[in-house]
Image 1 (tube, rainbow, N blue to C red):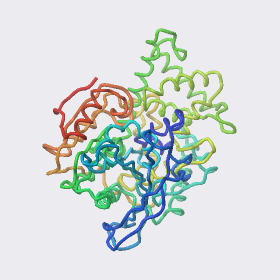
Image 2 (cartoon, helix red, strand yellow):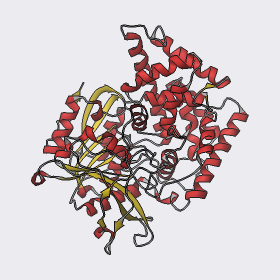
Image 3 (cartoon, rainbow, N blue to C red):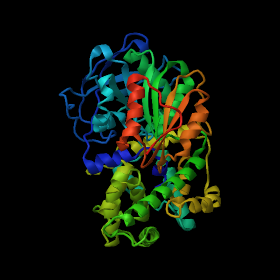
Image 4 (spheres, helix red, strand yellow):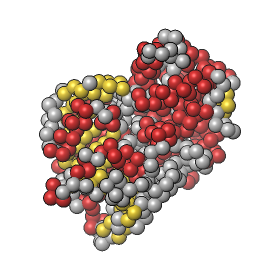
Amino acid sequence: MPNSARLRAAALTTTTLLLSAVLAGCGDDSGTDGDLTDQRLSWKACPAPSQAEGGGPAPSPLPDGDVWQCATMKAPRDWDDPEGDTIGLALIRAQTSGDASRRIGSLVFNFGGPGGSGVTTLPAFGQDYAKLRTRYDLVSFDPRGVGRSAPVICLNNQQLDRYFQQDATPDDAAERTELVDNTQEFNAACDKNSGKMLPHVATTDAARDMDLLRQVLGDDKLHYFGISYGTELGGVYAHLFPEKVGRAVFDAVVDPTQNAEESSLGQAKGFQLALDNYAEDCVSKVEDCPVGDSAQDVKNRIARLLKELDEKPIPGIFPRQLTQTAATTGIAQALYSKDFWEYLTDGLEQAYDGDGRVLMALADALNGRNEDGEYSNLIPANVAINCADDKPRYDTAYVEKKLPEFVDASPLFGDWLAWGLLTCTDWAVAGAADHPDVSAPGAPPILVIGNTGDPATPYEGAGRMVDALGKGVGVELTYRGQGHGAYDSKNKCVQDAVDGYLLDGRTPAAGTVCS
C-alpha cells in the first residue's frame, strides 16, 4: 500500500503485535502559568492508550515497582503565532532509578514513523533502556498529529480496511485510475477531518515542540535518542537549536540529502538487500528451508506467490482476503528485524498452502491495525507529516517513467515503492522542502549509527547525515548487522558505545565498527 512505503520505523509495531509488548497511554491534564515555558506538568499514572495510540492496556509497573507517569504539555498549534490557540502534547516518563545526585537530566526518545506514538512505544521497550535510566528520566511523547497529540484522522476503520485492500501496483489504466481515486479520497478525508492541523505537523514544528519540552522539563540541554525518522527530527532540532543540543544519539539514520523519490528508491534497494539476506539465511540452516531450495528459489517462489495473489487473493484474517498488496506489506514488515524472519518463513509456508493469516497479521502491524479491527492513526499521521515535509509532488506519468529504475533496484518491492510516490500528489498542504536542513554548526558531537543491513534507512544515510551536520558534529559508528536500527539488536559493542557516551560522555572514535 502506498503510504506504508514511506514508514521509517514500523518494526516497533510488529514487536507489539507478535511479541505482546505492553503498551501505554497518557494523561490529559496540564497546568499553565503565563508563558508556555513556565507551565507546570501534572504527572499521573498512565491510563490505557487511546485508539489513535493503538489501544491496549495501561503500562505495567517497571521492574523496580515504579509506575510510568503521563502528562500533557501545551504547545502552540501554529508556531508562527505562538500566543494563539494551543494543542496538548501527550508525554510519558519513567523517573531515574539511580542516585539523584548523579542524575544528568531527561533523555527524550523519538522512535520514528513518522507517526509512531512514543507514549505507547517507550514502555513497550523500556527495559531495553534500563541502564540509561540509572542517570536519566526516560521521556517520550506523541508528536503533534500523532496519538493523543491533536491526532490527524482520515478514514474510519471500515474504510481503512478497504483502502489497504486496494491494488497498490496497478497493471493497467483502470487499476491506475482506481489507485489515484482512492488516494484522492483518503487525502480529502484527512483535509475534511483534520484540516486545521495539516499545516502544522511538519518536522520543524515537532522540533520546536521538543525545545519547549526541554524547557518545561527544566533541562538546559536536550539529551536525545532518535531512531529512524527520529534521526531526521533530531537533525532538524540540531539545525534550529545547535546551542541547546546535549548528548544525542541517532540510530537507523534517515538520509537528509534525499528527496521523497530518492528516499523511496533507496528503500527499494534496502528491502531487496534484506530479502536477499533473509533468503541466504533460510537456505543456510542445517534443516531444509521450507520456502525454497536455494536463495534464488526462495525469491522466485515469493514472486510467483505475489503474482498469483494479484490475480486471485487467498483467505487472510476473516473476513478479509490476503491480496498482493497485503502480502507485500507483510513481507516488508517482517524484514525490519532479523528476529521476525521466522514469522516470514511461517507466513510464506502457510500462504503457499492457501492460508494468508500470518502475512496479513504482519501487514496489519505495519498499517496500525489491532486484533479488534481498530486502526491507530499511524498511517494518517505518517502521510500528513511526510506530505508537510516533502515538497515534490508526482503524477502517474512520472511514476510510469521511473518504474524500470525502481524494479531494477528491487524486483519484489520496486513497483510498490514507486507507486507510493503518489501519496502526496493531491495533498491539501504544500510540502516544505526537497529535503530537511540538518546543518548544525556549533553543536556538540552527535553519535550517528548506521547498520549495514538496514532495509528502511540504508546504511549510506548515516555517512551523509554526518557530512550534513557539519565538521566536528557527527561521529559515525558502523554496525555490521541486520535489521532496522542497531542499539536494540543487543550487540554489546554498540550498546557499550552508546551507554558510555550517554552516561559518561565518552564519545567513541569516529569510524568505530561493531560486528
